[in-house]
Image (cartoon, rainbow, N blue to C red):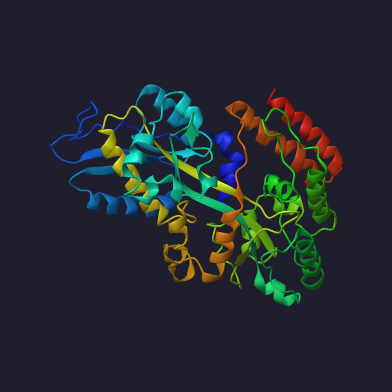
Length: 432
């Protein structure tokens, strides 16, 4: 469940320690923004992936370097932990990479500090030549947080919607039809009840911080904030309806207890066949399930179809010492390479070729055909949660959700109404 660490823990971990090297100062770099005739320049690239993901990215970089061997060579600086804090430190010191990953929503903050290159001149220059430089080719929602004062300062390299993974074997044993597009939370709840009754298996999984509570709230037409983000709207009938659904799952023992979730990888419970359904990112896979082949469906709907979208961005250092046009060409090459690797690519035409994108751990090496339609359908109505501009307040936001919503809900300490009232008060305090 890759989404959990990104969405629920990123505030605690901060941004990553990008090691040693500074802005592309190698053989062929002029150090003054000009290109050199001495040979390919080195362009540094800050990333945060773990070992397995980084090995896959290295293959993409090697291919890019081979194709551009006379122009530039990309040198990856991978830091799999504490990325945010290190990036901030290096940007302040003037030693950050030429190109680097950003968490979605951070581009305006860094742009305000003068750390990011304004991409508009380069997008205008190359948009007719390359889809990744043409913002009209992207799913619009994926670009929501990439502008500052009307200009682009970052672009996304993945747009991953949350979907419903399910165990078709358990549905068959319970005599149930598999989920289809348009199913509702009432359908979902009935399926959980029948699966528990017929198979003795938990229908679903709820843990502290996962799935995102706003998926349920949005589905019933509610919101966490008013339009201007000056006050929380958590204490609404729609939110209470969403919390009541979650409360029912707990009260009817359709989800594992918190004691059963202690010291385990909750995603493993799904793969082991101990829960029938699990919400996860579309790229999470769950291909190594034991005794069944996991399938996916769109999230159930309340009054509307909606899902959250996990975005990661890429930006260029405004103070790179390498010729900026050359850096932008490397930037486009990286976006193109990653867009043909990560599910779901934010460029619409690339997403339409989802069946051709290599997925190393999937059977056959590609996204299974029966997953493509629900993934693309989810992209049509995916939505981003809204960040609080103050980083400290944003971290406290996650703490409020954990302490005010998940803990009392999962431990059945308070009613949905009580939870909604307290959460609204505490969330509103963060934006005052």
